[in-house]
Image (cartoon, rainbow, N blue to C red; front, side, top):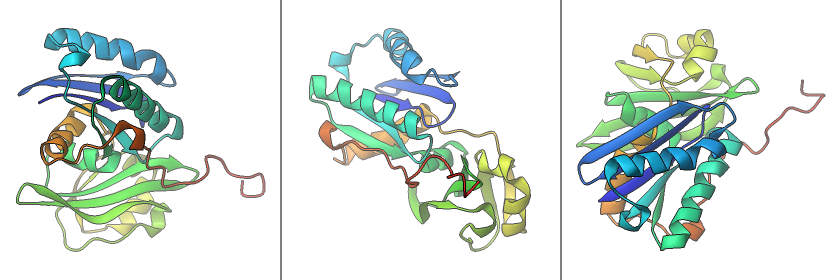
Length: 223
């Protein structure tokens, strides 16, 4: 399949294009420039792959959780491209993409959610499939869900920003930490390929972000 993936839930703008078994990917530290950079990067990748959008079979986007604005950008671009060509879309979880990218079978994924909280998910791979042990949730670092046993790989910015609190919660259970890991489109492309191949592509009109949190700032009284 020829697929496009867009991931803009963090400060990085990450895109990937697959042409059959070949993948063309690029991640740019975008800051707040995701909407400005995404389409030009996509055009470059399509050119490298020798494709145009008429040859694309489906579009994946980073559904969240993550930056509210970033999630809307990826979802909006995916919808626009898909609606114009009647293509299916697949929303891929950012925490699952972290797990997919870290090369382990037991993963705790945490992204810094600001406001003293983290986006948290835990996943195990069995028989080549990911099993969701803890669904994406918003937690205080000192109150993240527990996991059973040891040998877990910890990844994501939550383990950098809230290192001490998370280390206390998971003492003796974590084998390795990659606090600099970010969700990327290449990992999402691998997950999307399975989703599309199994008929899980959805109509573009149904695409929606997974926010998890319902507010973006603290009130004065909360601060």
